[in-house]
Length: 419
Image (cartoon, rainbow, N blue to C red; front, side, top):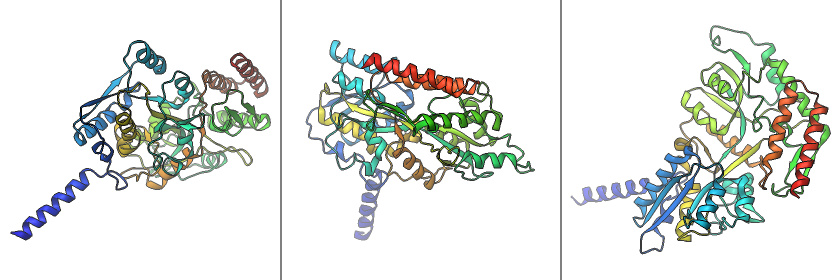
């Protein structure tokens, strides 16, 4: 009888350990359980992207189970600008959220409006070893860490592992296309390569190394430089993809290319990391690689956009709000992609049960870590919009020199107006 009781006790301990252990062997509810509170605390979490709804609800349920005094109240905000809405509700209407999700590119505005509390309680996890360089840079402003990196979006190339293999350059894809033979096995494949030639983020890697917006920390409006020679070289190569692969930018959209890839009709395409969940769900065996470079001497470096959890200085309880922000960005991060479709900014998670293997996902975070962080000062979207117009013009036949001159003149005029 004593032996049976001992076995039952050991089993119960094991079950308890499994129930509180997240990826990497850490107790994801420990911070919530050890909070020094004696009365109920409600933390309102605002977000403006419904993709995160299931994930934040899961975090809320988990924290409530861990500490009954903590209630996380997820609030979806339908607003054109969440920072403007947040400021109005916080300062004018006494309706302050405790934690909110925002794109890191809004850091300047949120900081200037006094809506960011420093992330200074968990230095052991919010560092480049856990999150990589781009995430920490995105979460920082004026030399201090404010945000809690949640997820990121960034372009990568994917390829069908059943019929294709990894490549480094567009020249290799061209060789595959030129020598491609249809067989009974691969007859479902309609194209070797196709992509959305119109999207700014997807087409940023080609010039990423040759245009500096905001300086090393992506927040200085006084810094804007272009390596004109290589910038133009890259754009000429970009325009050549039109005839090389027979791509019509009005027909080859982001959605059409993604659909064809998930239906085993396309060998190579460029997607955003937020598309990877859909590819996972399709059952296609695929690999992840950096967006290829055009030719020797031209590099390809993507731009990333990071979503942050931020603690509002007007929160009703700073310690609990920080715990919730940490839970959203770190403790529950292993559930992020399955529940939201977005890839967690945590680089140390073990990826399991995926059509793209662990090696590909490790590479994904390496690419993210070295990516260019989208600039974070107020009004900078003007430059990115001008870049998107630039690539449209070049793809549609305007000379690179003329399009470049128009782009550069417009950017300089804009920067003069805000300095």
